[in-house]
Image (cartoon, rainbow, N blue to C red):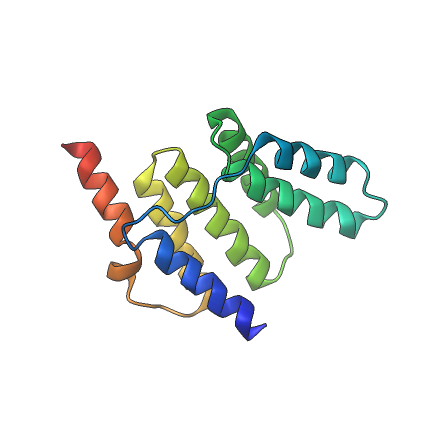
Length: 140
């Protein structure tokens, strides 16, 4: 569990350190995730498949896929009773989706909220450096 939390914060830090270190996802992976959700035999497997599909969609190069992933993640947060770790993961993926969509202020908003949910406030000015950098570039 501690290793997962460490990887999460490393990913958030790398995400906003200025370089684009976010992986891309191909259509084949998305298709596989969609099959996994369709073939799920239990509700738990379906939920896990939907999370993997959401991850794949927000990491896609296709804008429609990214928007679909954002929609799925937002819908999964409404009225859901999930653990803080699951909420944090969804907020992080929403941040990634909005970042890929070019909506840097919204991305930052989700990632700030993500850090609040976790209860661990790392130097936000450092973490959000990438968002601020891209937002400034868009204004020029």
